[in-house]
Amino acid sequence: MGTPYPNPISPAQTRIGWIGIGVMGAAMASRLISAGYSLTVYARTPSKAAPLQSQGAHLADSPFQLAQRADVVFTMVGHPSDVRSNVLGPNALLSGLNPNCVTVDMTSSHPALAREIFAAARAKDCWSVDAPVSGGDIGAREGKLAILAGGDASVVKWLAPLFEIMGKVTYMGPAGCGQSCKIGNQIIVGANLLGLSEGLVFAERAGLDVRRFMEAVRGGAAGSKVMELFGERMIERDFRPGGFAEYMVKDMGMGVDVVEEGEDEKVVVLPGAALCKQLFSGMVANGDGKLGTQGLITAIERLNGK
Image (cartoon, rainbow, N blue to C red; front, top):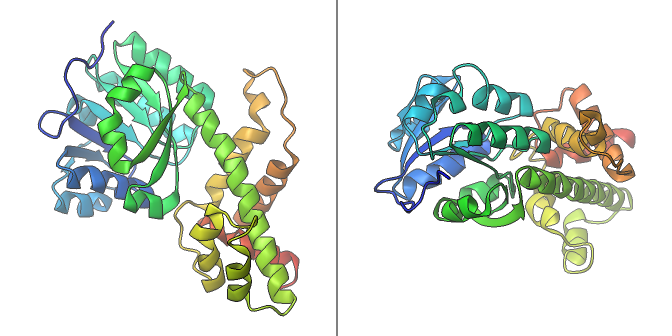
């Protein structure tokens, strides 16, 4: 079978392609450039690539052209539909990718699509890995993301030098398993965001100093990574996005509505995730879909008449 071996990944010989230069994608791509890798970017709005170009990134005119110039192509876009159009659509990545090259999707997307891309890549003697991440904009900037990888285990291992620049990778199993892991991650994150939001709103209504409240409980069972990442932001009303609230509607939906895809036989009853999806959907309906996920506290405040 065709594999990228025996050539090890190195800045001297591994060409990187990148699609998706939002808040997180740009930070992740920047870390690869800083590590010495040659990086080519495709952006629907080319002017948004200017900061990366100032670091030395090259610009491609299309996903097809980018794929022809790269050995490993990363995608970090918004929705499964964006993944499909960039990877499988006309003039897309797989139509331009050379044999033995790899596409790595770091978008939070659907497990069924990850499996479809893997099959299409193998039909072209290429490889694909689904590797969504958790850790937000801070994790992206600091290279401390949790990377949840699905696909061929040996290819994930081969990609380790690149993953290590962005965070810590855990191999979850065959194609689609990385995406399933991310859905489970988001179910937990959503529940933690909801609990933190309600706790802070309750503390304020009870007349407590909310900062003192958070300091008091963070060392006990109520403490969480979500509190460390977002607690101060909620108090400061800093709703700048690391991940958009509207994306949580997508992520919660892939957990709650997974049977609608027709592949999975078992219905998983997730009342907490369903509630979180509704609350984030309410934010979107109120025009707040572009707030960071920590903006969930505004939905709880609104329910309490604030």
